[in-house]
Length: 158
Image (cartoon, rainbow, N blue to C red; front, top):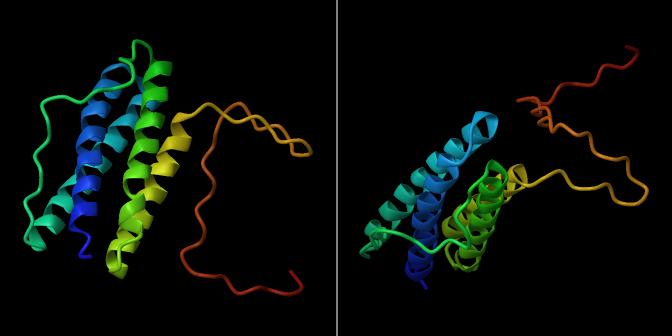
């Protein structure tokens, strides 16, 4: 298995995501729109990467369709965020088959793509309620601090 069919399926999902994010971006503003534009651009970049991989394997990448079915047309910013989360869930599912490819580079690509789409999906969802025994989440989401680029040596006595 050279992963060509799985790449084609992932590309189809990326085409659909780019289309859906056009709707999402049109129905949002502020920070949510900034996130949606970033997601739109990420899906365009992944789409272009997949096209190149398919061509390199001797395949013919499918072109995007003129339109795609969406479960609903968002009319509000909240509905647009809900659609974006659904789109990301679908993209994650599309990469599952590619994650089982025999070629390690294809498995790595799939794992990274799924990680990115799950992270974006979480960003478009409302805050989750606390589980029993855990503190309630704050109302505003703040990104976790980035880990240091290099490990810092521990300093005893300070």
